[in-house]
Amino acid sequence: MPQTKKQEVVFTILMVIVMAYGMSCYNIAIGMGDMSNDVFVKALTAFPIMGIIAFVFEFFLVSKLSKKLAFRLVNPEQDKPIFVILAISSMTVCLMCPIMTFWASILTNFNGIENMLANWLELIVRNFAMALCFQIFFAGPFIRFIFKRMFKNKLAN
Image (cartoon, rainbow, N blue to C red):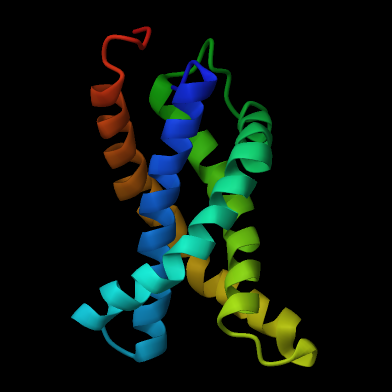
């Protein structure tokens, strides 16, 4: 969807804000044992560092690799746009979930090196389904809607 570097930066920033904050809220709510207004405040304190990490990985590594992997499954020239979007979104979650879960486990759940792998794998299992559903059903459509409005005169149809 983004067609220039500036658009790629804006799209990535918007997606990172929604996904990193949303997943921070999810993990904090699980850690607290319930959902409350405190979750939103606590997520704001965790968000800056996680947002920067997510942006760096997404912009410089994952976006290119997820498209490469997705285009093994779909052909953007022949397949319906929704299938291309779903393939790219799915591959992005497949790559970003382990990366961001690793950093989250280091920054927030570090119990020592002996349990690091087990904690990381447990968090991946807990986060993957939520991240995939959140990306496909909420964050992705919401950010594409906002992005199209921001660049409505500059995007090719």
